[in-house]
Structure formats: C-alpha cells, structure tokens
Amino acid sequence: MSLNPADFRKAMGCFATGVTIITVDLGDGSHHGVHGMTANAFASVSLEPPLVLVCVDRQASTHAHLHAKKRFGVNVLSEDQRAISEYYARADRTDTDAESVAGARFDRTHHGTPVLRGALAYLECRLRSTEEAGDHTIFIAEVEDVLVREGEPLVFHRGQYRKVGAGVDK
Ligand SMILES: Cc1cc2nc3c(=O)[nH]c(=O)nc-3n(C[C@H](O)[C@H](O)[C@H](O)COP(=O)(O)O)c2cc1C
View 1 (tube, rainbow, N blue to C red):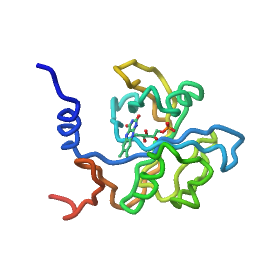
View 2: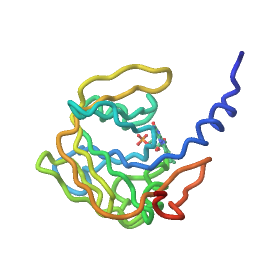
View 3: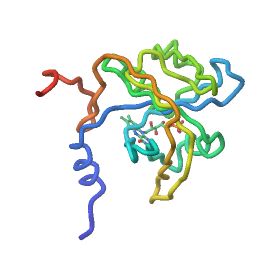
View 4: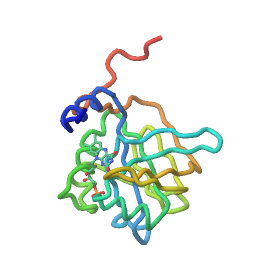
C-alpha cells in the first residue's frame, strides 16, 4: 500500500487539536529575543515525571533553536488568539513585528523563557531527549512549571480554526 501524502494529511486533519506557540529565548531578555513557532504536534507523554513532546520540522528555524537552548515554553492558545497562531506560522514573519501585527505580548519566567500573555496555559520545558522521526524531530521535555487560566481554547480541525461551540459535554 503506498499512501498518498494528501490522504495522510486529510486523515490527520480529522484529529482536532489545540494550538500552541513554542517560545524560545534567543537573547538578552529584551522583547527582540523572543522566537515563537505555531505547533499542534504537541502531546502529554508521562505524568511522573511530567513529560511532553513536540514534533518540529527539521527545516524550521525553531529546530536549531531548541537544540541550542534546550529550554522552551509551550503556550496553549485561547480562542481569541487566532491571529497569533497565523503570525507564528508565517515563513516571512520577523520576531520583532509580533506585537504590532498580531498583538502578541510576552512576559518572562525567571529562566528568561517568553510567556505569551492571554494564553490558556503555559508550560516551562527543559529538553530531555530527541528522537529523529522522518522529516521531523521529536523533542521530549520535562515540565518544570505551569501557569493555567480560565477560558476557551483555539481549536484546529480539517485545516481550519474553530472555537469550541456547545460548551462542556457532561
Ligand atoms: C495550526 C498549525 C500547526 C502547526 N504545527 C506544527 C508543528 O507541530 N510542527 C512544526 O514543525 N510545524 C508546525 N506548523 C508549521 C510552522 O508553524 C511553520 O512552518 C513556521 O513558519 C516555522 O517557523 P520557524 O522556521 O521559525 O521555526 C504548524 C502550522 C500551523 C498553522
């Protein structure tokens, strides 16, 4: 069986996900040292110890940054942060235009990792191991700290952004 890439994408698109921005501190703690990338290939791996994974394209600049810095943040987007997701998925973006173009503003943890304001959750991650997997690399990291706030998530499904419509199904 030889699988058509378009069919693979279509099948995976049925799996609704949240959307995150992976953040890396590239510099001196100023606004200009924030690098971000939109990612939905993010998952929980282990509870004890708390581990997560993110899969990053080997061509993405984030790939080199994660290897170099070994520390990153995962910011889970809220439903009103679609413009930020679109911005950090653009190949032609500059890290300095994020606030003026998409309204992205950041605080810093004591490690200097950028925390996106208004995100539903923030996870402070320290890289533990990597696994090459086709054209992507799986980065597995230990979660050292989290921030959580109330709100509804941005959802990505069949290539489109959605909001959770009918509330919680009890
Ligand atoms: C909804 C959405 C989810 C994405 N998820 C991922 C992902 O999990 N891993 C990845 O490598 N790229 C993902 N991308 C693509 C990257 O965001 C995009 O290629 C980005 O420009 C890479 O930036 P960089 O080269 O600065 O690292 C996603 C894009 C969108 C719109």
